[in-house]
Length: 169
Image (tube, rainbow, N blue to C red; front, side, top):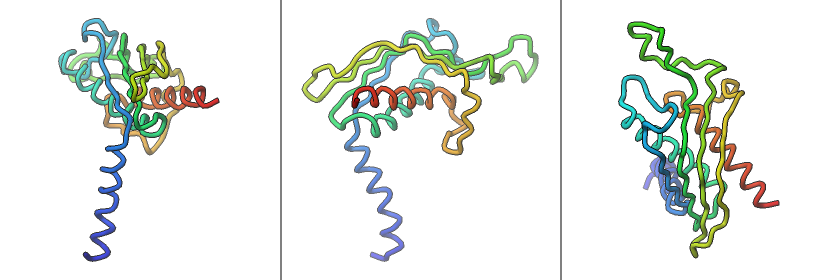
């Protein structure tokens, strides 16, 4: 095999191996109509919820690879989601369907969680009420601005990092 092809295949192999040895993450939530604000543009609340939960699960899965043991399972149930920004009802025309992100429309996530080991023993559990008043100051090239959960994903990563630090000390 040519050296250049080996270099191209190696990252894919590493990525697949890393995903096989990752903690399990399960994400659920209350019904869409019981959550504060999950609507994405003209998409229905139910479809918006599926997109938002999928993206939050993706963020949590990436964090779990760094902060949880391979044999642990993280179960999170969102009891409320309020995405950053708001739809401003006084806007008309095409602007009516735009989520306006301003400092006053902060993201909030409320959830219960449980982390269990391979034997089913509960490692940690509790509830959280996260918000980020400085969310607009996260100017990072690593954040994917095309995601609906652009601001909420880093909040969850911060929560997991702080939680793991507490567990280790």
